Length: 388
Image 1 (cartoon, one colour):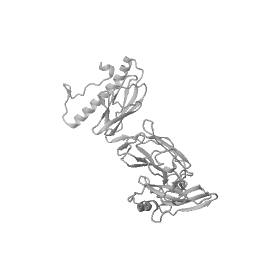
Image 2 (tube, one colour):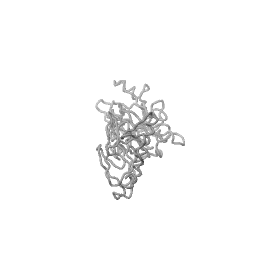
Image 3 (cartoon, one colour):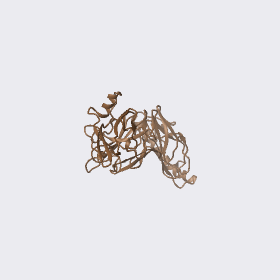
Image 4 (cartoon, one colour):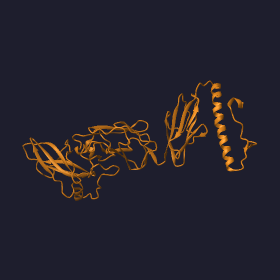
């Protein structure tokens, strides 16, 4: 039935079903002839097959690997090769797909018009479709809730443009994270491209040249999800008290003090100003505590100048101020009060806010505690520094 499918005759040098070639040029010509033979045979056979089985159309199905150096995909028994990911198939007929990871790699999931984690599947399609097998190195893991965090936000750079703004992410794990398909569902318009990885405990920065839109200078919520749509984290920031004011156009970014701690939205106490103007994208901004003695804690928290603890009466309230080292993130500050200065007479003042209302100077910031009530009796206050 050669006439029915328009199949060409075998190459003239074929003898007994074998190719006979005198040199490489002849060999290459006849290999090319065989390829044309196969493609022409397919083109000629497709229409009669469709007619014979009652199919009125064919569909294009694209089957690929996210990285062919990590793994291959087979359609029926045939391995998909570069440039041949898209084939024509009859609708409603199951395709046997198999993901085959290469040594040192693992099959993760199917993406596109099918989903699931079984390496062998038999989906059916009724229209043009796309299927991708996702592989990862054995030392990698997918980015999910608890594996990464937004660690720095520069939302309002000085000046009229927003070109310098950025969002920094931190890998909280000791494994390589696969960020493929991680995207924002709220705030920005950005999806991490396939194959994006984040090294263990490393940082990654995205800027306006990569994402659509801009960070809202008045504050907003940034929510990002994994490739399956599950929320990884939701982070809110704002430009008014009790949020640090110098992040709103005065040149400092918001730095997350402890990215591993889950956030309560909103969580202004979880953020501080960056030490440097313009932020510190892609690098650690915290100072290291190397001396945990009393003297070491005081020097770490306040610097050589001391706390500079002052008070000011405003009407019937008291406002306290003290200067602290901006990036002394390994310690906490607490306010205590006493009426008699006795050893056992101090109690913690709760429910107060430590506000950052001034632009930092020389790596230190002024912290303000406002509206402490003033009674008729004397009262004493102290700031206590504790290692976390």
